[in-house]
Structures are given as structure tokens and as C-alpha cells.
Image (cartoon, rainbow, N blue to C red; front, side, top):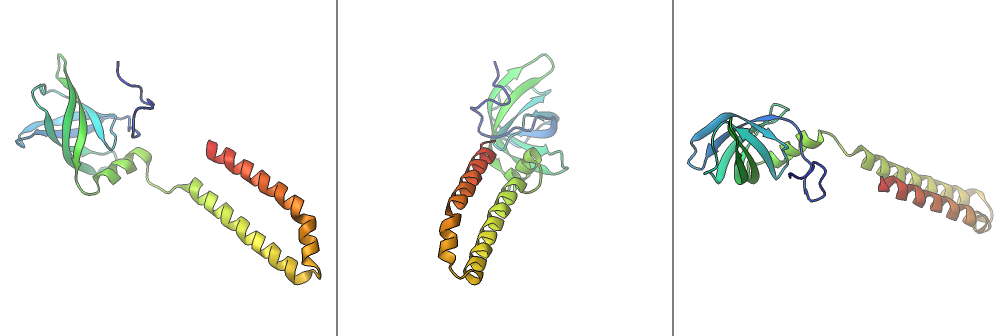
Length: 173
């Protein structure tokens, strides 16, 4: 029985699609230029080929990514299964060209930035700026700022508590 796609034992997210992969044996002899890779991760992929690869332990590959980039590298075959029409195999990537892991990661997770992380940082920064402005205004305009600080202290503690609870639930999801 194969592991599920969301199996907690997996270390990397998988790209569940079919990608063309060209494979060579360890002597650089072309085995299949129309093999199909499935479940691609930064650490490996499964693939199907018309070639009997039961006797092969190491391959070189060129993976055509969905964004029209390619990634080349070497992989160790972890398992192989012969079928009537060809073979299935699981390949653990042992070598990748420079930038290959980044390109695979970009295809799996999509390009872009961590917008949630940026929004969190912006919210924290805005809160700090507002607090500094309030404290500055408090000390400049009020004749006895410490009396006002002590009067507002319970409200400040309640607002901080609400903010901490909100951050806890935001990061929990």
C-alpha cells in the first residue's frame, strides 16, 4: 500500500501532476525521452517508462517543469515495479544542478512572497508606531502624564491580551 499524499512521514510537499522526464542510465545511455514523472518533490519523484529498468539502480534525468523550465540531476532508484506495458519506479534525487531545488520548489508552491508573514510584520510595525505616537502625545500634551498612564494601564493590558489571543489563533491556522 503506498503512502497517502498527505502522509505525515513525507518531508516535502508533492506536485501531483504529470511531467515529462528524460532518463539516462549511469553510462549516459538514453533510456527513455518520453517517461512521465509523477508526485514530484525536491527530494524525489515517481515515474513511469516503457523501458524495463529493474536492473538499473542509478539514473540521470532531465525533468521538464510545468513553467517551461527544466531541471537536470541524478537519482537513485528506490523501488521499481515491472508492468505489462513498462515500468514504474521511485527515484530519490541525489544530485541537482545549481538552482534546481529552487525551481522545483517554485513549481510546487508557486512563485510569490509570504503575504501572510508580510501582513503580520506590517501589523506589528503599525502597532508599535501607533503606541510610540500615543506615548509621545501623552507626554507632550498632558501636564501629568503618569496619572494618565496609570489610569489607562488596565485598558492597555486588556488590549494586549486581546492582541495575543488573536495572534495565537491566527498562527494556529
